[in-house]
Amino acid sequence: MTAAPLIIFAVLAAVAVASGLAMMLSQNAVYSALFLVINFTVVAVLFLILGAPFIAMLQITVYAGAIMVLFIFVIMLLGGERLPAPQQRLRWQQPLAVVLVLALLALAGYVFAQGAAPAAVLAEPQDYGSPAALGLLLFTKYLFPFEFTSLLLLVAMIGVVVLTAVEERRRRLPRASRRT
Amino acid sequence: MAWQEIGFIALEAAIKSILLAFVLLTAFAYMTFAERKVAALMQVRSGPNRVGPWGLLQPAADGVKALFKEEIVPAGADRVLFIAAPILVAVPALIIMAVIPLGPDMVLFGRPMRLAITDINVGTLYVLSVASVAVYGIVLAGWSSANKFSMMGGIRATAQMVSYELALGLSFVGPIMLAGSLSLRDIVVAQQQSVWYVVLQPLGALLFFVAALAEVNRAPFDMPEAEQELTAGYFTEYSGMKFSLFFMGEYIKMIAVSALTATLFFGGYLGPMVDQYPLLGIVYLGGKTLAFLFLMIWIRLTLPRMRYDQLMAFGWKRMLPLALANVVITAVALVLAQ
Image (cartoon, rainbow over all chains, first blue to last red; front, side, top):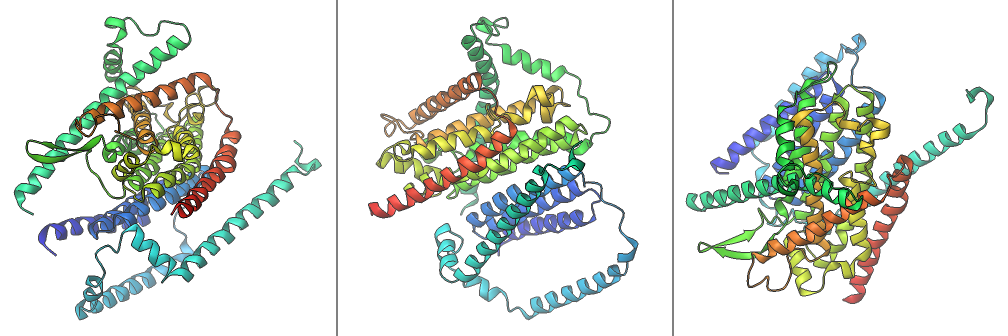
């Protein structure tokens, strides 16, 4: 890696980590969601640097554009932007979190020191991020996970429809207690 | 690559970006004027005719007025997001035009030049991702105003834009499959070799235009800014130049989706003699864009606003299945044609 991409990567990585931290530490749920949007956008730019514009654009369209908009929609609709103060009974998790993070960093550092990872990255073909290559992979090598994921999404969707249908029927029932 | 070459590329991109932004901002100013004039003509009135000959300097007068208005930030508002929201509306509108080809490649000062700011091979996806990010400005404007009406406008806008984005995205798929490329330039070139895609994709073109109307919150889909119910909706609390930025976003997005409709389904910059004189492409694309802009104004002056539940039902129960069917039919036809 030459100097210029390395500098860009360092800046982007710093922004990604900072926005991730800000997302967790922010007391306002709307701000948290927006920091997550920044985080997704930075990850999309990282995909661009890796030469995968298709995945970068999907990252922005699907995560920053659709999913996070729905998050913000729900936060606004329920008026849940003011988070309650951190609960006292979850205090014991804080030291545990510190220990686990240190363990993860140590493991990552160990793997990095071994220097085993980069060889696998270089082996990827030139057009690995193109729509055609991606589609081919999804429908051949990763067919089962791909179909399984769509099945999961379908089940979730049917669940939502059924749950709202029950709610709707209950609302339409002529009940004396509901007539106000 | 030599540093000199990188410098040339950067300089070319900068000049083209500045030119495009300048043209778009001027076009925005005169779109407001055109809308008022066309509305006046259709309603048998005169319209703005006091400032300059035929009222042609009206946009300049409006701009100066907006600059000198008092900027108010409501007491309960979230200051940072309140100020950021109009910017988040205007910027995506401006950058969406970057991938639309304005003409065939040409040679200028001995260097090959593209008549577009850039030609990325995922141009259509770029348009979709910018359009999907554009909703944040409107949502945040509604939320940060600390006003129930604004909030309702913001929530309506979110629901509407997310719903119609699906139909919009699916109606892109027809031209993409026909051209076999995600690049807008390739789609135009493919239309040169066959016919305008409106002939092959009449349903796709119609769905795209209707979904685009909803995406830019134009009548009959202007629920988020219904004056009668929401006192103008998400920008109620805005004044002066911040208020103008919302209109800038809306009108420039209108220009962008008109240019996109022309590019995807009506041959883009194609026209007689365009290969000999590449600059003619800008004229052709401009003419086609103007025609769609006129159509949008005409629709606004003709059709009443849809009710909110009708709007959502139309998006999910009519537009989306039709768009899906269009994709399937196109795919089957393509396989049969081979």
